[in-house]
Image (cartoon, rainbow, N blue to C red; front, side, top):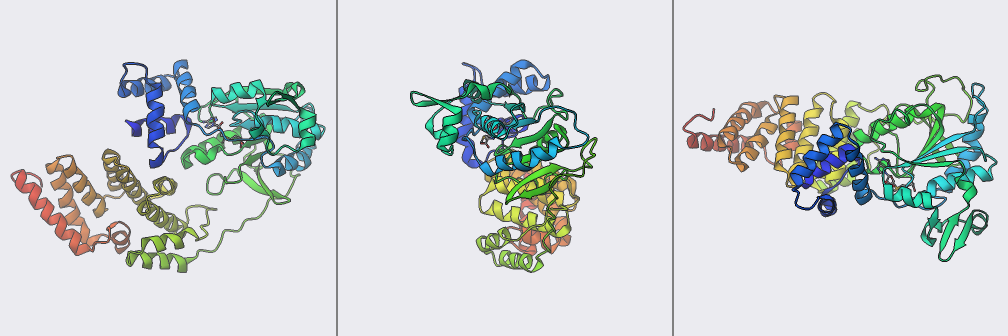
Length: 469
Ligand SMILES: C[S@@+](CC[C@H](N)C(=O)[O-])C[C@H]1O[C@@H](n2cnc3c(N)ncnc32)[C@H](O)[C@@H]1O
């Protein structure tokens, strides 16, 4: 039930969860269950309402967002980005020869309690952009209510210099209230970054701040949201992310820029529908690191010696070139890292790497194998079976996928299905590649696995009077 709930929240809100989040998810689910309703009915209704685009689904997702999103933020977080915005980005935007005479427009996407949006308003007002308009969106209605109230505790103010505080805040008891002038051009709106919203996702903004939001999203959701953010930027517009976030391996629509040590992104001219200007700061060339084959060989040797912890230590410091993504070497490093992360129990990171590999030819089968291991480690045998099946579909000669399907079929009592899967594994194991034996053989050699599969198949057949084959 919790897994189904996590999957739904992940698809509808973008958020991903690891094994450590199960209690939190379980609590959120029980808070939202109407009295006397069981979880299956609640999830069926929510899914159907989402599919049909009913407003009840939007309200329910908003309530779930209030329970599950992380809203940590404060005023003037990463102040260097505000300096780059007013000192470099907006001068470039406003001087474009093709620009209509309109004030600067900014989006704070995932604005939480409003601190980021008001910080933008302060930075813009202090730099003389009093007319600039700011739209601030969040999926969490509780956070938006706080943002609209504009009243904060000392905690939110921790990085505000006293002079800025004097200029823009009024102390009311133990609270700090923002200057009403800052609200004049500021619009707080409820919006879900994962949802299509034709009113919002069209070229309108000079710059978007979407900081510390997508770090909670799965890679495919992040890629989709970045495409959406790109569609909301005017040609040559800019995107600011949080310091732990990157577009490396996620999007080709942006150039990385750097000003005084601050990194940010600019929509490439080819991604801009009407890109004209060649002005503005120059892109930072980022040559991909050369493939470090020696380290990868060392990792594989350590795996052969079953020193998985040491292997993970080495693979984690390999500089993986993700631009352009999809080179065979990058693919192999990401796969091996995913396998080692799953051995180490870091299922979220392992699944993130595996998702990066789905759709890349035969390695998709390997990625599904990693995801199957993650599901099983998370006590989700049904999910594991689905991924092993997908692995066998992606590469029908993947002997170990059939072996694991046999093993898991037994746990559900499906001895006849188990027998068929073991038989197929026996047929294919002799030609399984050494690479796959090392990566997915669980430390057993080919002969040992062949002998296990033969015994199991015999066992299952005898139980079904020879019909297993
Ligand atoms: C950690 S806060 C970041 C606040 C601010 N941007 C900053 O960097 O200080 C993340 C915010 O993203 C919002 N968020 C998460 N998923 C979202 C979604 N699918 N659509 C819109 N907002 C979302 C959360 O509600 C939360 O308020």
